[in-house]
Length: 109
Image 1 (cartoon, rainbow, N blue to C red):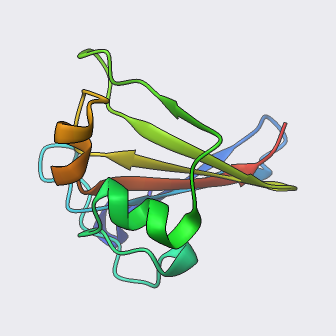
Image 2 (cartoon, rainbow, N blue to C red; image 1 turned 60 degrees about the vertical axis):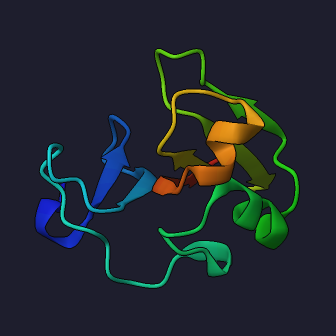
């Protein structure tokens, strides 16, 4: 983890990087905000409708049952992109106000 730089690297058992997670300001999680460029021209201030305008409709929208944050999943093999928002509910009302919380870029399975 590189908390001060706002990202973490996930590795498999052979120490190969399998995903990179970029964080918005994570005061409670111990991460500073990632200061580099984000994929797809995204910004941490983007709401769900803005992300859809930039990247198109996601393959799926996961979470959001009130117990987990909502994530939009995109795929461009061999990569997968997951954009997680600051809401735990999938309703249009909540998504319209939810901003990008973190972005994970990984290899497709």
